[in-house]
Every structure is written in C-alpha cells, then in structure tokens.
Image 1 (tube, rainbow over the protein chains, first blue to last red):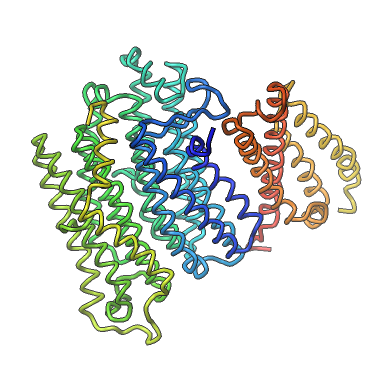
Image 2: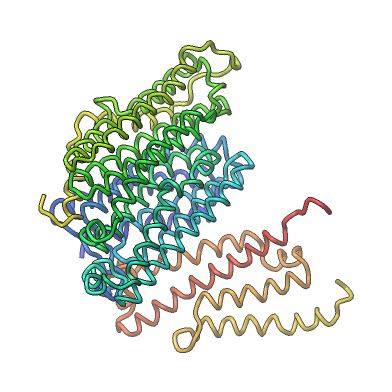
Amino acid sequence: MTLATHYPILQVVIPLLAAPACVLLKNPRACWLLTMLVMLVSLGIAGQLVWQTSESGVISYAIGGWAAPWGIEYRVDALSSYVLLIITTIGALVLPFAARSVADEINIKMQYLFYAAFLLCYTGMLGITITGDAFNLFVFLEISSLSSYALVSLGKDRRALSAAFQYLIMGTLGATFYLIGIGLLYMMTGTLNMADLAERLPAVNESRTVLTALAFLTVGISLKLALFPLHSWLPNAYTYAPSAVSALLAGTATKVAAYVLLRVLFTIFGVDFVLGTMPVAEILIILGMAAILIGSMVAIFQENLKRLLAYSSIAQIGYIVVGISLGTVTGLTAGLVHLFNHAIIKSALFMAIGCIIYRLNSVLIGDIAGLGKRMPWTMAAFVAGGVSLIGVPLTAGFISKWYLVLAALDKGYWPIVVVVLAGSLMAVVYIWRIVETAYFKPYNGPASISEAPLTMLIPTWLLIMVNFYVGIDSSLTAGIASKAAAQLLGVSP
Amino acid sequence: MRYHLVLRTVAKILIPLIMLFAFYVQFHGDYGPGGGFQAGVIFSASLILYGLIFGLAALKQVIRPWVVRVMLASGVLIYGGVGVASLLLGGNFLDYGVLAHDPVHGQHLGILLIELGVGITVAAAMITIYFFFAGRKTTKQ
C-alpha cells in the first residue's frame, strides 16, 4: 500500500476537508492560501491519474474496503481522468485570479465562506467525475450544486439572489429527475454500481421502467447541462455571480454535466441501446443544433458582456452535445476535445471580463468604448479568447470544430456542417461588436482607469496560452479524447 | 416573557430530557434505530426550544455563534479524519477494520466516531439555520 494507490480518494477528500478548515480559519488570506495549496495538489494528483490510466488502464478503488458491486467504487478511466484534468486545471488558474477579484466583489465577512463553498463545489465536481456508483454521483451532484447556488448568490448585484434561486429550482428539478431515473434502474436491476448496471440492463431493456428511467435521466442531466430549451437558469446565474464564480462554473459545471450524460448514455445504457434502439441521438442532435443557432443569435443582441458570454456558452454546449450524439469515435472525440477547449476559452473570457469589472465596475458593452487603449492586455486576452471561440486556425476552437465537421461529414450529415459554419459566423458578429467598441470608439470613461493588476492578468493569459498551445499541438487533448471515446464506445483505438 | 410561567417551567424540565434522549439516540445508534443525523436534530431541538422560549439573545449566551461555527466545521473534520486515519493505518479510506487490533472493534469505533461527526455538524447546522431565521430583520417593524 503506497500513497499512489490512494490517489482516487485523495483527489476528493483533500478539497473536502479543506472546506471546513476554511470555516475554522476565517481569515480570507489564510483561506486563499490553503485553497491555492489544495488546488495545486489536486492538479498534481489529476496529472498522476492521467498518467496512471494511460500506463495501466482503469483504476478501481473500493471505499471502506468493500468490494465493487456492494460498496462504493471509485473508478478512473481515460475519460474520467481527462475530465479531472480539465476541472483541476481551471481550478488552479481561476483561484490566483480570485484573490483580488473576491476581495473586491465580496463582503469581507463572507470571504471565508466563499472559499469554503468554492472548495465544496470543486469537491462535488471531482467526485462526480471519479465515482463509479450511480447514487454516489447524485450525492456529489448535490454537493456541487448546493455550493454553487451559494456561490452565485454572493454576487454584488441584488439580482444575484433571484438568479441563485432560479438556478436552485431548475438544478433541484434536474437532480430529482436524475434520482428518479436511478431509482427506477435500481428497481429493475437491484444495483447502483455503473459497471454492474451495464451488465444487468440488457436483460431488462424491453421493460417500460427502463425506458422511463432513460427519459428521466436524459432530461435531468440536460437540465444540469443547460441544453436548449432547458437553459433558462444559465444566463442569469453566470451574469450575476461574482467574476471568479462565473469563470469557474463556465469552465467546469456544464462540462461535468456533459460527462454525466456520457456516463449514463454510453457506460450504463450502452451505445447500441441508446443510439440504435432509442431515438436519443436524433433528439439530442436536433436540440444541439437549435442550441448553436439560437444561443449564438441571442448572444449577438446582448448589451451585458457576461450575459453575452453566457448565451455563447449555451451555443458551445450545443457543439459538445452534437459531437457526443453522433455516436462515432470521431464525433465523440470532437465533443470531448471541445469539452476541454471550451472550458479554457470560456474561463479565460470570463476572467478577462472579471478584470474589466475590477477596474470599470461595469459589464455593459457601452462602457467599454475605447478600453483597448486603457487596458491593452485585458482586451487583447479577450480578443484572443474570442478568436478561439470563433474557431480561427491555430486556436483551440478550430481543432474542436475541425473534428466536429469531419465527424459530421463521415456520417453524411450535411446540415450539421452548415449549422457549425453558421454558428461560427454568428460568433464573429458578437465578438466583433466587442472588438469594434473597445478598439475603434473613443474612450470617454474616467481618466483613472488603467490596466488590471498582474495577479489577475497572469492567470488569464496562462489560459490563453494553453488555448494557443492546444490549438497548435492538439496531440495532448485529441490523443486522450480519442482514447476515451474508443473506450466509451467499446472499440479498440 | 416574564408571564409565560408554564412555558418556562415546562421548557426547563424538558430541555435536559431532550438532550439526554439525543445522546441516547447518538450512542445507541449501533444497536437500535438512530444515529448521528437524528441525534443532531434532536439535540439542536432542545437548544432551539430554549431560544423560542427565552429569546435569541439568551440562546446566544448559552451557545456562542463562534462555537457553533467551530462545531459546524469540526464535525466534517472528524468524519474525514477517521477516513484519513484508516488510510494512514494501511487500509482503504473509511475502512474502519484497521482502527483497532480487532477488526470488529475497529468497525464499532469507526462508526461511533463517524456518527459523532455527523451529529455535531447536523446539530450545528440546525442551530445556524435557527440563528439566521430568528435574527433576520424584517423591513416593517
């Protein structure tokens, strides 16, 4: 027994125990320091897990020493280690940014609670990703959701409270639907372990209970995923949350929900049943295409920058869902690559917006006129992220769209290609509006506005650099993604 | 408050009994129905009853807000700490068997400590919720 065998549990337990420690510490700086330490350790563990899974395949960890179908099993394979890496990367880069941003936006008495909730939310998302037990997943889903409602409600604007409440209602509906689905599956199979469920389900596939379970699970997870038309909670939550929270949630929350969708559809129910027997793929592809078109269209008309990015997120979720639902290795790879790429792009963009809020205290597009000269680095980061959102070659966004178009062409689905191109063109429009206002209009704000502090700029630019790096050398993300895709579909890579 | 003699007397008699029952539910949880969650709720009910009868200020004298905050955090830390301890002693996380020389004793000890952690945190959470509801300022006074 060495430490390395315990990595799966340490990944979850370290941030979980740091959260109450923050409540005890109470001093914001000490809390930040502890949280930062935890983020770095988690990132290290996630890196180790990626390495371990690529060396020796699936890692299984039995909690309490109870063997798999009876006890709770933590299971790390190529897909979950990949998602762990996404979450921990975003966490480790958002937190350095959060120090200044939180000090500015959140009441000093509440800051230790912010860090505690931040850690709990992070724990929940890591737990969802790592667990191999369908009910344990629900528990972590609730941990991450409850803490993210609290995080959203910490926003400066009073509307943050109603946004958090709306998020709470929709999120609880989603979680309840998930729980009902799992309950129905448990009724039919008597097991909660995902691998065990996958073995037992084919025998009872025909029953109406299982079909109902599939429907409940898909709708419940789509609510968490903010898939069009179940996205109504997302714009408000992202707009009124503190900047650091928007950056974290935009990069991770919906990605984790996409991971849950993959697990349920492909690991538990199996590709043949979900994509062959049931019309899940058709429904999801149509909804995904609608999300791309409508999300991008609505984003064009937004005056609030955070809301603009939120609608753009809804569109990007569309790309991910379309890729996933194609059901081929290339399609799944496209979805998974975009999972990573969109996480870093959107977090970087929300952090750039956070820098603007820090200096300007406004997120309206009218107020950033001429800001390109006053805050050159912030706006340059925003433009670089925006370019990647559009999908210009040499950026991360290009790689994911390239894979998606390839996968669609493979299957001969021409409409998808058209929608992807239309979505990219609309992204050009909404990014260009910002570029035009920031660079080609005269500055008329207060004279005291200068560049954002380095502690906020450096993490933002690090994410932008990662974005260009994976845009040029996509072997890291696309490599793991295609391996994970092959594992999910049960074909050899 | 001076006038509610019956309420005050009954509360004073009941509160210790409620607390005693909470401890029974807590520590008898291995053998009978009960456990940390229920015990925590029952324990906090005794303090909330005190708050309802004698007022929030009096309750805050009995149990200071910072004590509640420490309880809130320490319960979770006890739970996680047991897990980490079993990990350090060579078992898997939360494998109570390694906590004592005899695995059966270890299982007993483990579940007792875990439930204690649950009880402390649940009691503190209930009291915190009461503090916030009772301490809320209404717009119209």
